[in-house]
Image 1: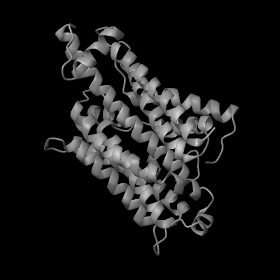
Image 2: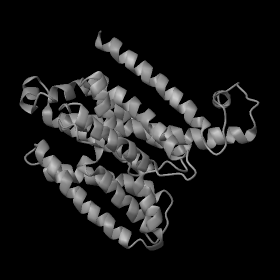
Image 3: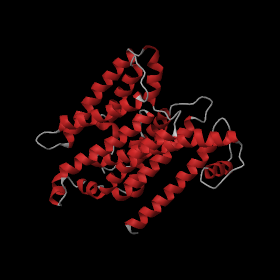
Image 4: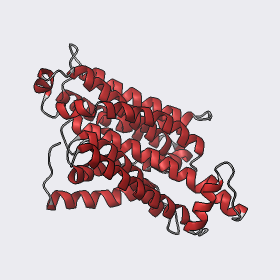
Length: 336
């Protein structure tokens, strides 16, 4: 089957799955609302359409559940996209978006904002975003020498910076006092109190970044052959590596800034999709992104379906870790 047809079939199927997950997720919560009512209320938001659903149901769906689903979809989309690129970039199926210190930088920035003695509006997401980008570009500068950035050096620099920033976060938590509960809750990753504004701002960063990564999907395929072979085939290796690293870090920073540190989405989703669609990034990247959106919406639904709501990061880890171990034990893990 031609690649374009196969890609279209997978994207169509994953979009259908995302719509189904969204409808089901919208019905679940302290107030049960039927699928038909949810669809009716969602359509009533369009100009010229109305609904006879109760005003309370309309508020719950349009102002509480759908913004949360939208933000979860954007975050899952971003983390899975960045994870796909990182695994291809490092040619390692165990790589994820946090490997260059992005999540650790965001955590340090966010916890610093939480424990700061002065409360500033939007300080937490701004500090998390700035911390993530500073960590990523700090790692890149540490690993670069003479205009070249060896992947092995980049990986080791990322590990060192993550360890250092982990110590910074630990120190800030010890100094947090009454703010320690808020800091730990943020570090676990959550989508509580999501708004349309957060989803829109994150989406405005993630969508152009994803399109940029998609434009370099062919170059990422060639880089899998090795840097020397890629250079001989006309790829500007260092420029391509810088761009892929910068955009993947930007997507991760945008996701972490609005939802905290959510693990396993950028690791497990690209890996599963690689087993299903193969290693070609022209189909792997868009399918992983869509699957990541559905996965995070579904896991967040599980997180808020019980008697007490859990941070979604706990659910992704609880589902992702055993599943990944199952894959390691029962299926061969291929290098991208």
